[in-house]
View 1 (tube, rainbow, N blue to C red):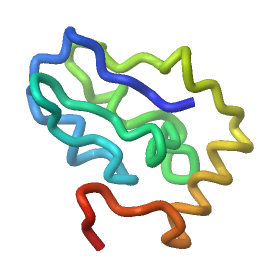
View 2 (view 1 turned 45 degrees about the vertical axis):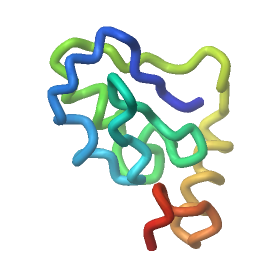
View 3 (view 1 turned 180 degrees about the vertical axis):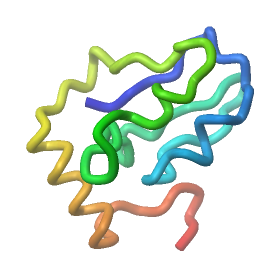
Length: 91
């Protein structure tokens, strides 16, 4: 499942640079996570890096986007192969 950033976000800027999939970007009022790019760091780390570093614990799992570990690994593979568009048209 993808993660989400709640309204408790304080815009501290620590989550965006630690995301290995470039899934986190500034939104209108808080940071947002692109669910098509979020693998909960599966394939990169043992735990989601944004959750580990967030000082206010505002990054829970998105209950509307349940994915198995296998599905997250498949998404990781697609990202590694360039099958998922880069955020903001980059790359």
